[in-house]
Length: 507
Image (tube, rainbow, N blue to C red):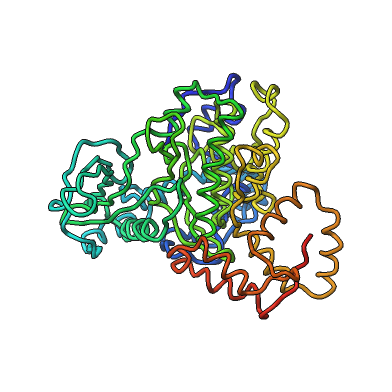
């Protein structure tokens, strides 16, 4: 996870005390609930079975808790000196912290050894895993490897140059993932999915270009565009952690554009942070490129994920509750926007447990400097990205329609996947509800109308003001990539417009 050298000016109210850090305790109401819908990546040891107490999720207290004295007194009615008084303990044991559960999941994903239950099964399983990916084995004959330019949890990145072919002489970046580190089936599946997503996504200026994938007996090699301008995090640190509003807008427009594009294709990144955005070159006006899709996944608009992944400072509350979709990426963008504008993180603590506690319960502060000197629209923009309730949080495309950013450099609003969810809800409504929605449309604010009119125009309605399945398919063909097939977006879209023609009035 990335490191930011800025710290809050005042003592952090959410940092745990010494005793808290020692016990790593946490309020039981904040423990992420396990959803009923199973995940493809869910392991048997992720589920804790047994009866749940009314007091604690993981402990069943003794019936003797109702007695102030022992129910078995000594002969004569008096207790012996050695008997233990059965006092009513409100907290007989400190409840476990969600950090332990989350760190255990991340450790299993990364193939690290830990003392958690079932880890022995994972390690033993690693020796029999099929690590053949079906990629080309001509890496050494086609590319000449160069010096290392970066290192991460799962591997490292080197510069390289093509020896032959159409790209002969071109410099590229090669992500090297050792097969020895793929000690779990989850880790292997992550690599397969990363390559599949990079192959499928293409055609966006703010997306790192993918060339090819190779493998040999020891490593997997992912060949991509070489970005020589450095990380966004390095740029933030070089500026002392503070951007002007206009400079922050320039960064936000690019990030929101590429994330809206990914969401339209049915891809959720799940690890958005400044370290995963690179500048294409060292030029002052260089484009930002989104990289590292190692934790990304395909998701339909009507699906929810429950895999706990990401970086602690940027993880959304619903990810900790293990029920989320594309809105989790928007939360991470909100954290980045907060850092750009004020130079510090909205949620900070000494331990991961403290960070998760702050993400779940605390609200970001907009009272300390430099927030009072920033525009009201800038604060409103960040607040809309950091709503804890994902239903209230705006989408990436809606963020580009926000008054703070929409007039910057003639921003073009992209087609939003959210609009299809809204259309599906409208089409499945009763006649009475449709009439009520039409009446409510007259109360929409100017900003809400701006977003809806932009989306309506992007769907290219017929001259009579109606939208058919043909209109939708035609609009999507302009932006579609192979990722739409992988995410089964067609299955969802076929249910949006059940009839050949539907009347969706212009608001």
